[in-house]
Structures are given as structure tokens and as C-alpha cells.
Image 1: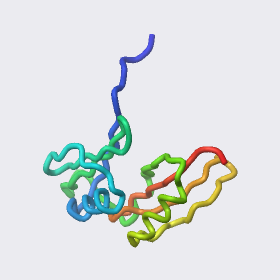
Image 2: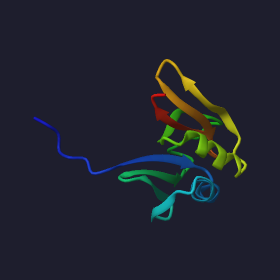
Image 3: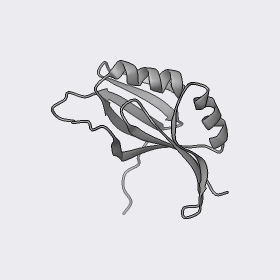
Image 4: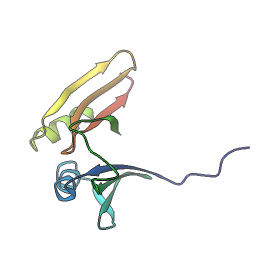
Length: 125
């Protein structure tokens, strides 16, 4: 028996400063705001994929200096173009575009203002 259909997905990330995070996801990454819920802003990443950035209450979601337990991955054939685009906007990368032999992916890493790791990658080489 198969499971009921899934229409889309949203990855939620938490922040202590929603305005700074919103500027990053809107102005730096250039994502379109899909739904503003006040304390959460949901951005369309692609087709049916979304990322939500929510104000942390401080009690339920403690944030650490590095949110290394989450990687938000954007899949695109244009990794180098994204690298150039974001560098022109002042983004400092954790790792420039490189080929990962183990996983057969070409990718780079940066962090958002909350320390969440963002990977930009393409499969194969």
C-alpha cells in the first residue's frame, strides 16, 4: 500500500532576528516571498519546494553559534554562476565550488545570518 500523496515540502529554519534573515533570503538569495505569516516568512525555492524562516521564541528553539545539524541545499546546474552572483553581494563562502568525488557532486557552501549551512550543488560532473 502506498502512502497518500505529498504536494510540496517546506524546510523551516529559526532565527532570533527575522528582519535580518528576511533580507538575506529575499535580497541576497533573491527568493520570492510566498507567504508572510508575521512571525514566519515562507519563500518559494522551486516548483513545490519552500523554505520557511521563523522568529524563534527563545524558549522552544535554542539557536547555537553554528546550526551545523541542518544543511539547506539548493540544486542547480549553475553552481559557478550562483557562486559569482552571491560573491558580488558580499557573501563569504565556507567552501568554494569543488567536485566531491565520494558523492559525485559539484558544490559550494555558505552560511546564512543564523549560521545555517547552505549548500549549492549539482549532481554528476
